[in-house]
Image (cartoon, rainbow, N blue to C red):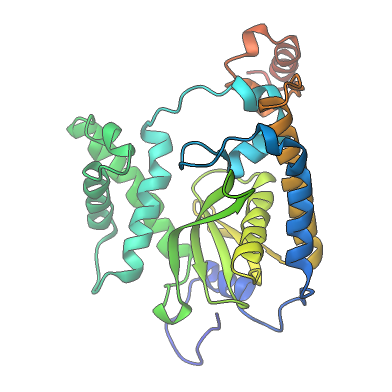
Length: 317
């Protein structure tokens, strides 16, 4: 992605995005045999559990791991195994999905559209999409709740338009694109969804669009996506980045042999931990951390209770 010689004037935030993810030189060299080497490393981590895995004869009958569950098993194995409450949609967690839909449509729609109109239409489409369970929440909103949600999402979407440069079709944009890595004859699936990618291999850039605060795990998530691309497409992206909509800021990283090796080690280690506690009968390890705040096991977990008590004393909440 390169800035044209002549074109629209960019805001300072938009120019920063172009400067950060624009192509300024050749991508770091990736050894030709790296994909096969890393795939063998991951396969070796799974090998001891082959006889214990689901048969993979259907989509449901397989072991599935995504970026969130991989992060969970590294943070606290007990939380990963049984500490997560059933997910419920609400106004706060639905904003990201709605804004992502508005961004997706804005790239391809013809003519100018007011942000509020596009957000409202996105909510209507999501409400009536049988493949999106967010619709079950959206249809329950009363007129006031719907108007409030439209206003919040319109503000975020407008903020995105102010902070991210207008996306041109020449940049080969892809939005909300599913990616996945199948292992052990499709008995294990590593899956995810890329918010936005620009360019084509080997100049591709993968971007996560964030409507919340910045966390260190965001970089690990993007490295996982880069690894999946290497092992499936055959080319890793040139760069990965997180764009934080509310602060109009971007954090990026070049994808190198080192980052791909680190991502493969993290995935192999996470798979080993998850498979040991899920299928091999090993007791999960408890590690205190931010997940303790919403873990369903915390009432019976001295480690979690001690962590929360200390955090309350330190922070006064």
